[in-house]
Amino acid sequence: MQNPFRVIKYVLRTEKGAVLEPQNKYLFCVDKGANKIEIKDAIEHIYRVKVLTVNTALMSGKPKRVRYKAGKTSDWKKAIVTLEKGQKINLG
Image (cartoon, rainbow, N blue to C red; front, side, top):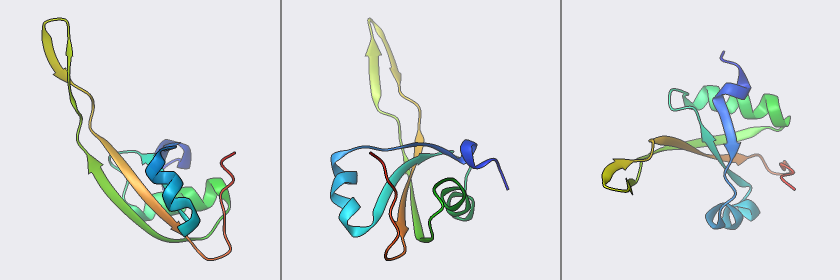
């Protein structure tokens, strides 16, 4: 198992994430090479909660421009983690 703090980069605090919290779902930015089992183990280790399911999505970088050069931001991976009933992550 990888180091849990390398698998989970940070919690995504977005409007979509705020809508999902009452459904016991939380958004995380995770390592691109991590699989669902590693993400589940890392969340359970760091936050001491029981994870029911993990859904992942690869997010492609957006095109950007700096002066006259075109480029793009880095690709990243998003995880939507559903906790078991009665479990909660305190993000405040």
